[in-house]
Length: 265
Image 1 (cartoon, one colour):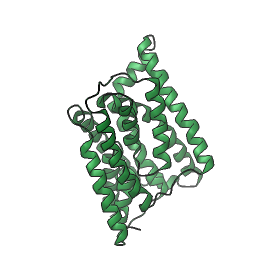
Image 2 (cartoon, rainbow, N blue to C red):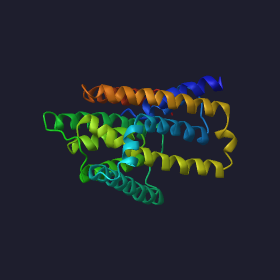
Image 3 (cartoon, rainbow, N blue to C red):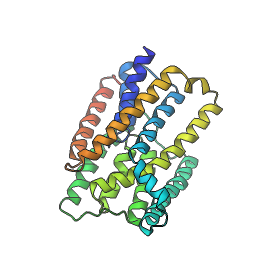
């Protein structure tokens, strides 16, 4: 049964990590319905898998940055990505020191999920019919960094959802917004994951990190995240984010209902 639940949780994490629908909320629902609670080490490692997946999806972009430092356009993008990463890191440390993070419990996550749906509606309506750019500005870089902090402070917001909406709001096209937001997310999530893994090892959870069910969940999350990101990149070429908005509203309502009826606590 541990292997079955590991596979289920890996699938849920992989599919939802980079879609704008909140992986935290989906994992919370899944754990409540299955009546399980995995270790912190398990939760950390299955979140690392999708980072590897999105790195593989964008390996050509990353390689172009590594080999194209002589090109002004490439250097400009690297500086913007680095700036977003640094701002996120500094503000993240400040937020952690101040304890600015809501608990990962049902009510705040349900609220963030529900409200996030209407944010997507608003952004899509505001940007509808406007000219969209394919190149990120410095304003986009700063906005994406701030969006990452908002997502970190308010579990259920969805890091990918918040960052992509911020980039869209400041004029990027949907494909360009997803690309820039995900490229910023790669070093950010790797850094956060590395710190969490370090803490897990320090707390004596090495055995849990190397447990078969943890490794299986990691592998499943990596594969499903790769499929999810590839699908999303194709979907947004000819579609808006409105379906995700409706989904979030429905999911938020479902979480409220499950909370009211005692299905989730």
